[in-house]
Image 1 (cartoon, rainbow, N blue to C red):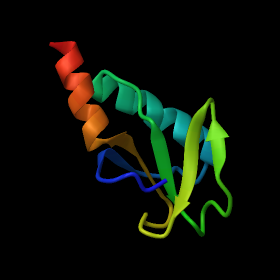
Image 2: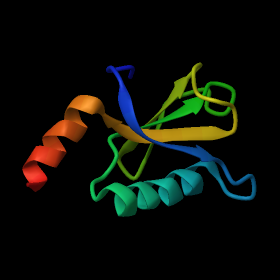
Image 3: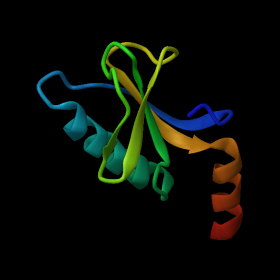
Length: 87
């Protein structure tokens, strides 16, 4: 799901929680910080062998994401549209 540059947060996963719970936690933090929902999550292929969805949010395996981390965000284009809409 590499659709260009992304803007978001890098999250070190809590090893005491499931991948799904880590996604839910960082999704809520993203929403509180930016005021809008993320559209994707990337995880390292070693942490996520197959794409999944968590509460409708796609979680995709990417080799460029650090192991034991999640990157959650939106594309630069979508961020710009959201900022214009908020004005």
